[in-house]
Amino acid sequence: MSPAEKLRALLAQDKLHVMPCCFDALSAKLVQQANFDLTFMSGFATSASRIGQPDLGLMSYGEVLDQARNITEATTIPLIADGDTGYGNAMNVRRTVAGFAKAGAAAVMIEDQLAPKRCGHTPGKAVVSREEAFDRIRAANDARAEGADILILARTDARHDHGLTEAIDRASKFRELGADILFVEAPKTEEEMKILCRELPGPKMANIVEGGETPDLPHSELRDIGYSIAAYPLTLMAAAMQAMNTVLDALSKDNPRDPHLMDFKTLRDKIGFNSYYTNSEQYKSSNRECKL
Image (cartoon, rainbow, N blue to C red):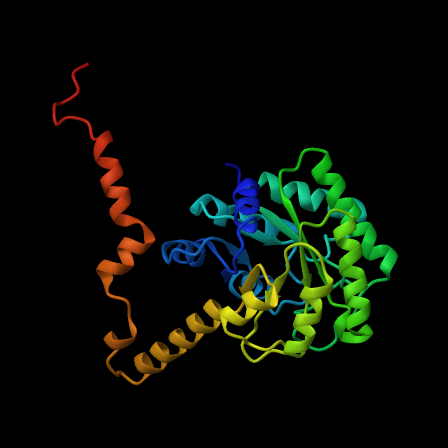
């Protein structure tokens, strides 16, 4: 099955798929090793890890595409890539969608923010007009019609400035234009989440940012509300940063570090050293000297 086919099969299941979001190949491998069915390349976390900068449109299309390719080469579970605003006009959107399909992504997210985009739970974000937003999704669908084997995750941030009704109207139109998964960013209450799932067709994604605007509900409640995917974009990044700060503090004070560290054997195994050595055994030549 192609990555897109794997994701379609998951979405056909009547269940909530919990989706920890990755930011590089190693974090994606850990998600897969923990037996999660899919992952998302968080733009917030990827920008922080790759260029050490906030998610404010500073990463280029090429940098994001390269990071996605690294992830898909290291894992086999479906990856949803963050295509931001498509990196330009509708023609750029077409190129973006086609590029992520070639890189092995199962889906690509295209959003209606005004460029440069911002994290959905930070100040200052704004959306483009309805017409421009719809053109982005039309262009994404056209890229797929030309052979890009990929799903389209359509995101709207209209809730922030224009209210829930506008966000629902936009997302509903996205679905008409070919979007496979709908994502209304930052509903503020559980009731808003229920309204979204009741009024919008097809699979919906909830975006759960610890400390963000959307209620951090238990998985069972998200499932009952009607979500197909629950994304956790910053959980792994926040955990990694907290752990690194803790051990850096211990190191600076010459305190014991062992309680905060993964043991060396487990670390090697999770990175892939042991499987590498096992696989390489079959290629070892005999000890006989080569005779010319």
